[in-house]
Length: 317
Image (cartoon, rainbow, N blue to C red; front, side, top):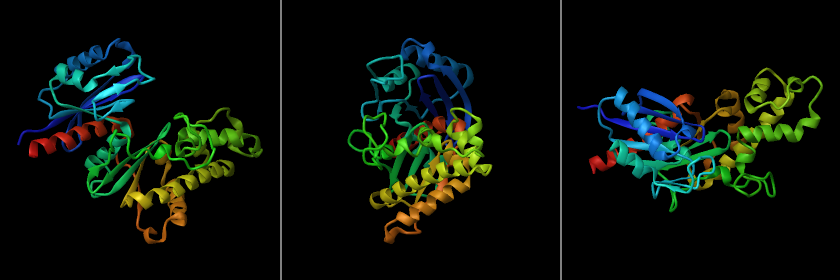
């Protein structure tokens, strides 16, 4: 049987990463190019094609593209604020025209869910939610083995469900969204709000403007003030996961991203909070798993998995 390949592409404001992925999740070639160096999307895609022509032989089953403000229904990037290309960009059409393979556009959170299903910690699951704890909080929902996208492609935006009435201002324009508390940015905001109460013996007094990774490192070294921040973060996330279970009823939540990778201790704290607030009929029935995707290549794997996910179904239909 001929090997099948998908091209996974992650377009960001700073860099674009792309890679050739096999159906069993191996990246056989990958590269990065600075997005801002290319004045048009056509120029960027042409550079990707040039590198692929030099480093890969074989056709692609499809191309999966992750991009900010990507509309999966239209295949267009729509008014992305962190890209130098403005307006509406028919990115799938451009990839198909230049590289010559079918393309699908997907947001990064949904790509992560499909990546976990095909290559990661959710291979054995038909009902799960992936939670990405990065700068914000992204989520992708799989129900009965199907990705839930909604009418406009934005279903499962757990990060923008409000958990604190009139709470912290979110980038979406509302107040109290989960991602303003349970994300790397949220951890730092908690530190900034509590900074005046740092004890004299806390490691956190020795550095200005610590990031979330440093705060979690301090917790793992036994810093009690850092642990209060971690406890607060885990508690608010655990409560939210308990609430979400009422309408998604997953087998598991799969956590990915910087603070999620801090260790089993953080997962245990989230699990305790989740069970305390869980509806009785679902208590002790939902796992919390750590992602099995490699952090560095997760975006490539996720977008490539989405191409396999969609285009294999079309081939086999």
